Image 1 (cartoon, rainbow, N blue to C red):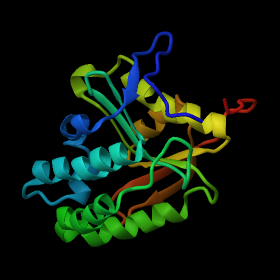
Image 2: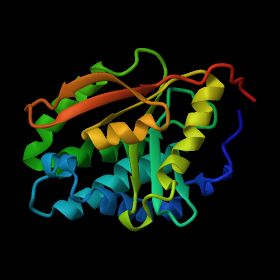
Image 3: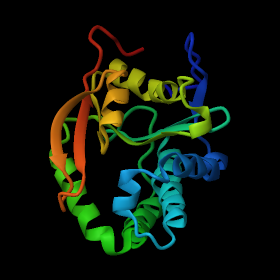
Image 4: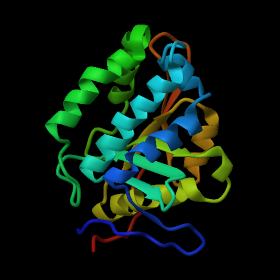
Length: 217
C-alpha cells in the first residue's frame, strides 16, 4: 500500500500527512486542546505545566508522528491525530533512534514527581491493548475555536481507512466519558475499564475492529 495522500471525503474537511514544518503547530494545537484536561493536571506538575505540555506534544506527537509517517492534520493544523503503527505497517517508517532517545529521556522529566504514576498507568493500559498488530491512537485534538466542524473525525479517517484495508484494529485510551462517546462515533467500543495506578482517574481502553469486506488496494 502506498503512502496516504491528502484525503478528501464528502462532507468532511481535507486532511494531509503532517510534515516537519507542522511540528510547532501540532504542539500548539494539542496543547490548546488539552491544557485544562484531567489527564494534563494529573500527569504534569503545576509548575510550568503549559510549557511541559507543549514540549510533551512537540516530542510525542510532532516529532514521533512526523518521523514515522503516522500523523495527520487539517490544512491549517487546527486538528491533529497521531498514531503508533504496528511494526512494519506499509507506508510507515521506524522511529528514528534520536526521536526515541528524546522521548525516553525527556518525557519522564516533563512529568517530574508524577512520572512514576504515569509510567505505571501506561503499563496497565498496555496490558489491556489488543494482543495482535494494531494501530494505537496516541494523540487527538482540535482547537476549541474549530470544534463541531467534523475536524476530529476527519483527521482520524486516513489511519482508520488503513486499518480497514489491512484488516487490523485500531485502539486507544481515554480518561473521560466524553472521549468515549466521541470515539464511538468512529466505531470504537470500550474493551476495558481501568483506573490510573494511583486510582485518581478512570481510564477506558477502546478498540475499533476493521470494517468487514474491505480489501487492501
